[in-house]
Length: 147
Image 1 (cartoon, rainbow, N blue to C red):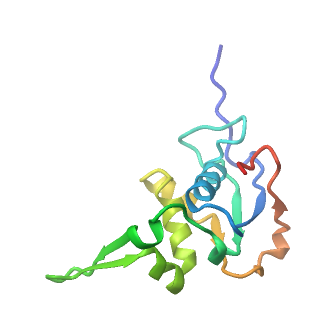
Image 2: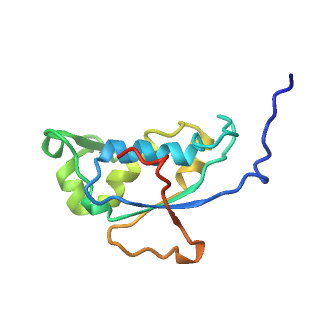
């Protein structure tokens, strides 16, 4: 029996629209990462980019459970001595809610050039509007929805 490797050009790429209103951050991020990797397709292969595009709206309305708003911290380093900067989840949600969801999704993708390519296929917007009407994003099918 031979192993069939799908051709990336032959696989159809879909555009999905996900509403982030009242969804839990981690559950939503894992759902998006699954679609970006293409694990929902029968021709999934871990070394190929077979995933679909995802448009997320209402990113400012996602929620977290427990005490994560005050306890979860995002750190970055400026490169200078004493340059460690930290932000809590609550502050980053006020400042840039798209970045919170993007960091959660990117952390669930592979840490290589394939993962970086997959991360470009997610578009996150704060309000209910998005500029991707021409791609005709479709609602997420029920078999892909977690909640």
